[in-house]
Image 1 (tube, rainbow, N blue to C red):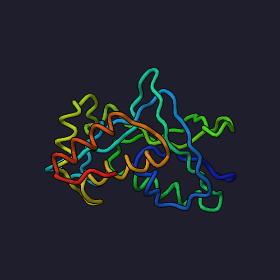
Image 2 (image 1 turned 90 degrees about the vertical axis):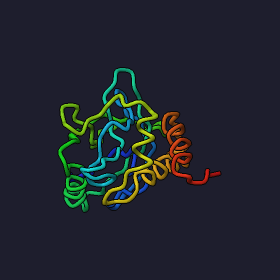
Image 3 (image 1 turned 135 degrees about the vertical axis):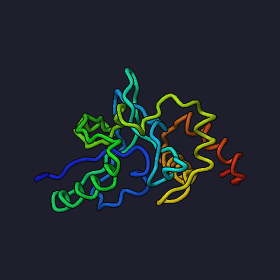
Image 4 (image 1 turned 60 degrees about the horizontal axis):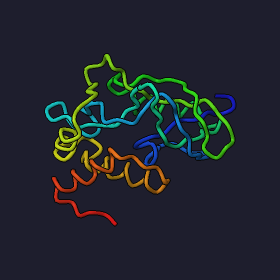
Length: 184
């Protein structure tokens, strides 16, 4: 942390990092994909009515496009403590240092990433998209409606020029289920 570090953002860290960001670079993480594969019982759901949140799920040949967020040395310890409190609230994520490729051509680096623990009870990989949409449309938790999380993530990915076909389908379906107006 003496020189600062990178954090890989692929979902809510894109639009709500919650820590000072010294620099942002589009980046990709190979061997992992963004997936609604984790039940949320805190932030976007409750134990009685879980929501779904995105997680990095390991898959051969997969690539996740996101953003590397650089943390300056002077805020490193506080940022790491904040991220651990935020991301490790239920131990469903595992903290990993993974190689990322910066998409501006500046090479590779190592970034802190929070990946799903497939052995954890909140892991729910391979849910059909329709089931994901039904859950997301109905759930809400301490940080608000699950649909808002989906919409914000999708919109911020689109602003970065990152396409995600599954998220695009989920946005259309959840808007239909909730009666939310389509966005231009």
